[in-house]
Image (cartoon, rainbow, N blue to C red; front, side):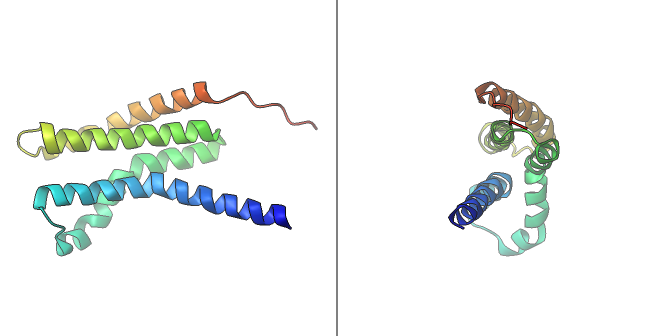
Length: 138
């Protein structure tokens, strides 16, 4: 019984980590961007465009998460790819807010291609960091 309870706690912990990396980071990025641009969070704008923006920001993470679950990849590969996608989001966000002179909305066109490259880079680093598994006895 104790093993079942521990397994259930472990699966809840993994669920919160996965949700934090796939939805939490894009949501926090959107809030930071709104506060930086508007010096506040405009509630009506947030209600109108917030869910669409979160979906746009979180799509690379969600696609990677579901593809790796479907292909049953190791957690090192899963989290390496999620970290890579989050690095792409933060890098493009910093580029648009601090480097671009005119608040370049066209800069977001590069987000998904950059996310694809950094996700695969993170996944390959996760592959190299993972230790080989012992085959299960039959």
